[in-house]
Image (cartoon, rainbow, N blue to C red; front, side, top):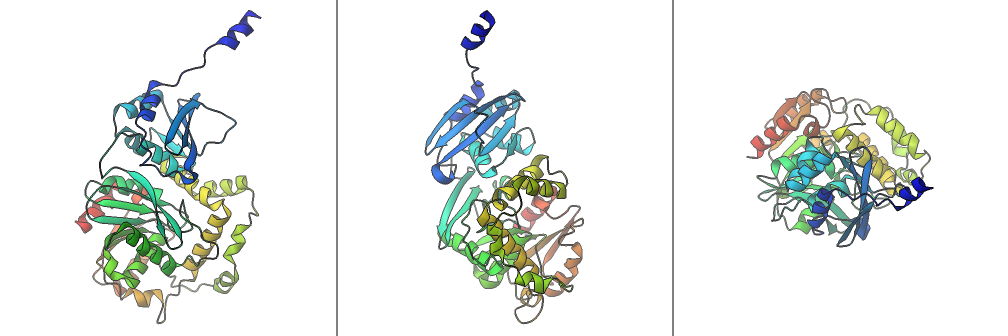
Length: 396
């Protein structure tokens, strides 16, 4: 009985002082919280965890409710949390070095780090959204100077350019966006989700931000979108960096008639249970349980497992496959008209867009610069130092 009573009146464990320091620095202007409220769980070591609840401009800290599913999960040991509290740059540094892990929702998780960093001034990392004709476009940005707009690939989000934003922000105003249909941006049902549609959204985002021109950096599908911006509105683009850009297939597309007949709207129906989808995706991607790759898989699943996000993914993938290579409106014919100065970065281990495409680009754009790196399809994450050094050299 005595032991039972002692347990019953034992005081609740207090959160580390470092977490209180973070909440004391909270700046609601830096984080964009869809719907106005969020639950962010902070794990300290392997056992302890506390929940941060954000409601509008208010923030609170309480013991973790294990029955509630958090929107974002941040975990680190006590020493790392103390370091983050002591150094206003500590959160992003710890994240970049793998000492702090962010899972589930990078938009909210990294947004929390930015909002509690204590950094002030016009160049601080911040999350926001802008309205264009079709709805809201989600962005993250940092730095001051000439604008650089980063455009993610198929199934990705603006978070795939966090390393780029961090690297280039000392010299440029770097803006990464979620394309329509992806991440935290609007996902219209029935939209085309092809390169011209995405390119027009990028141009309208520039309008909304009051930017006449910008450098463009695009990876995979984002590279194809950047090329389209350079073709339909060349006066809006300064220099262009294309990281393993999606290009039209040159070999016979034997499945093209079948793919044309498919309706992306079928993605509105979830015919596969979530655990099955997660298992398939994580088995397909090496290292999907660790670091940046794991966070990227979380971002993909977050959009794909929503009906609108799934329909947008199918539509965009379909359009990449069906991109016509030849003819008056074909990709390779139009590519010859691209006028902005351009640099292509190819991954020697890329199986999606093999480096062999370089020779075809050289035929179409003899003046373009080329860089080959020992990596796969996402150079800015796989070889960040070499990729960003090449970007700086090209833009500078």
